[in-house]
Structures are given as structure tokens and as C-alpha cells.
Length: 392
Ligand SMILES: Cc1ncc(COP(=O)(O)O)c(C=O)c1O
Image 1 (cartoon, helix red, strand yellow):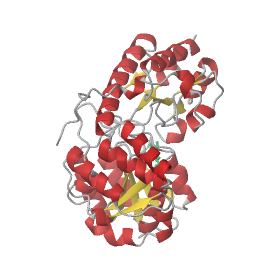
Image 2 (spheres, rainbow, N blue to C red):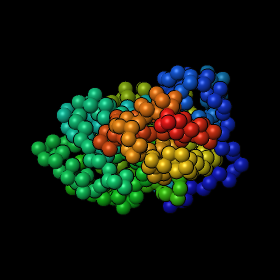
Image 3 (cartoon, helix red, strand yellow):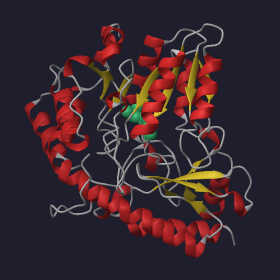
């Protein structure tokens, strides 16, 4: 598989282009949830300007008044081409895709297709908190199969969880987070093949949330779940939203394996009315023309990971941080600091720096905090300074 090259295009590091004063003018969740004196490194928004091809595509659409309803398959075609080049995956069939409003609503719709009321949805805790509440809101039962101590899928635990989930003859699904939020774990081809084999053995349907797929660095290879042998009955959700910071421009794609095409075809038509036409234009431009920008971002994130590891080693050696190979999120094990179950609360109130509490990430989240690295080196440095000050 292709290694992701580091920035060679002359594209500047997008993480170093904005000032804090400019960012504070933003009205999104990251910037408006806490008072102005709090440095926000929590929700997964990035401190970057839009990639130029995305800005151009959206601006052109607005100038044209091209703000009607979406049509066609350009988004799926752009993703298929990106997947072919980036991951050597030629199996993304445009006719087995559907546009959905965003990844989480797509997850909900996929789970509706393959499970019923009260059925189990297996997740690998600690994991992205909406996996819990979106699934609960759907009247499915979240069942945890915690990651191993190495932050990788524990196949023995997963098998036992699958066995119990279907023991009374019920249907069950496995909501796989690939790459994994918050640990940044990139699942290997072997692990994913083993997952597919287990899912087939127990009749568990796999729904893979692959939103962080373009955000893999560090020599790891992203393996699309649907590309592994035995995964034909799987469903995947992909989007340009995380990697190009487009959460406010709503769109995502649901993708069915060969054996899940009939399930995806049952998705109600109205779900496809949710995504924004301008969002689809933005996502399509990102995948088609935003690769040099993405590579510059990944190089910047690599720098930030190393910077954070160095700063923590120097100033907060009690925090255990194992940089993952993907996402822009750092999962900090703060248990040795003796700050209790919710160190993020201490950093917020005593240090005026906002991280995500580990608690909503489920089992394995207590004593942890999640830090968003998609910012400048200056902000990361200041965040660690504040975290350090909070302990004194
Ligand atoms: C694993 C994961 N899935 C889904 C989402 C949300 O995606 P969307 O805004 O497309 O629903 C996020 C956002 O951070 C995420 O980390």
C-alpha cells in the first residue's frame, strides 16, 4: 500500500496560518462553549483555514447561487478515486453508496438497517462518546468490548462479546471505529480480517465509522474495512469532514460491501435529503483537489504529536501519552497525577484549558483526557504550560 508522503508540494502547514484572535471570532462549538480566557483544545474542529480548492468550490457555488438540492454521484466518485490512490482500494463501487447527512446520522441509519429494537451494538471502549448516546437514542443496547492495554482490539474479548450479543437469537451489530478515536489506533489488515471472520461466525453485522481514514500518518497504512476478505456484508461511513474541517458543511457517504447492497438499498429516501448540496460540493473538492493540503496538514500533525510528547515528558511526566498513528487527537492517561476520574475538570478550572473529559468515552476513560492537536505549535505549548500550572 502507498505510504503517505510528507508535504513536498510547497503547501504551507495549515496549522500555523491562523492567529488566536482570528480563531476567537469563530462562532462554532469549539470557540463558543467556554469563556474567552479558556484555551479550547477539545471538540474535533481544526484551527485551519479552508483548503484553497474547497474555498474556491464553495465560493463559486455561492456566487452562482448553486444552493439547491444535491444531484449525481460526484462525491462518491471523488471518494472512490481518492481511495484508489491513497489506499490502493479499487473496490469502492459508486452504485453501492448513498449520501447521508453526516457520519453519525449515517451510523444510526445503518444500524437501523441491520438491527432491531433492543439489539446489541458492540463498541470498543474507550470510544467516541456519541457512539453511546446515538445508539441509546435508537433503542439499541450498547455493549462494550474494551480495547486491550495496548489500545488495540482484543479479539478474544470481541469474540466473547459477539457470542453473548447473539446468544438469545437476537441480531447484533459491531460499530467499529477505524481509525480509533480517541487512541489514534490504526487497525491492521490482519486485525480487520479477524474481525470480519468473527462477525461472520456469529452473524454480527459490522458498521465501520471510517471518518478519520484520511488522517493516518507515521508510516501506518489505513485499511478500509470493506477491502478485507470476508467483510462483504459490512457497511462503512466515510466523509471528508474531519480531514478537511468541514463539519459545518454537512455530508457523508454510506458504502455497502457486496453482500450489504440490498440492506443499503432499503435506506429510506428521505435520509438522502439531509446532506447539504454545498456541503457535497465542498467534500467533493476536498477529495479531488485537496490532497496536497492534506499532506501538509499530516506533516504538521506529526510535528505536533512529537512536540506534545516532548513537552509532556519535560513538564508533566506523570501523564502517559502514546502517540497514535491517526486522527489529530491525543489520549492522555493522567491517572498517575492523582487528579481523580476527571482530570480535564482540573485542567479547565485550575488551568483554563479545555480538553475532553475521558469519562464519556466509556470503560477505560476514567482518569484520562483527550487533547485536540489540530492547532498551532504555540497553542500546544501554551496548553501544556497551563496544564502544568494547574498542578501547582
Ligand atoms: C469517530 C467519529 N465519528 C463521527 C464523528 C462526527 O462526524 P459527523 O460530524 O460527520 O457526524 C466524529 C467527530 O469527531 C468522530 O470522531
